[in-house]
Length: 168
Image 1 (cartoon, rainbow, N blue to C red):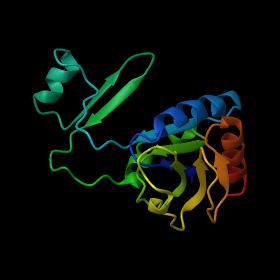
Image 2 (cartoon, rainbow, N blue to C red; image 1 turned 180 degrees about the vertical axis):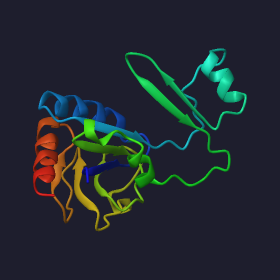
Image 3 (cartoon, rainbow, N blue to C red; image 1 turned 90 degrees about the vertical axis):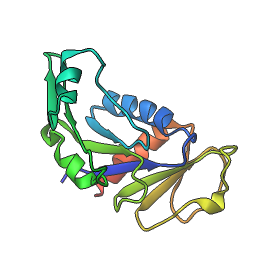
Image 4 (cartoon, one colour; image 1 turned 60 degrees about the vertical axis):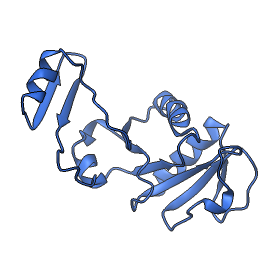
């Protein structure tokens, strides 16, 4: 099974910013990451007026749009079903990946690096350090029972991820 690692934190803490840098560094090191991003907002990856949008809106339960550069599968979930991370991972082509990164899904039973940023409006006491937390990345020195990573040191974070992958 492919290793799954979630980056979890409160909104506004810098998950996306960190992931952009981590993904870039992983690629530089020859590691092929996939990404699943959770959002609490209504979202649409299609463009109104385009054929694929119009066909999907006509009632297609799934729409796959493909070109030589990329393809995207959109699945309608009108009942607002709770997202199942394992199901979403199974939709990915795991033969092309070495690592699955997940943004969000902080309540899932997968390995997690929690982020803590001073000035984010939250207190360190609010961090949920469950048995799946393998590290905390922070911009301040805090006392946690797991490895503490410097949130601003991307190379050290990626070194930690590589070591975690090797020992899984």
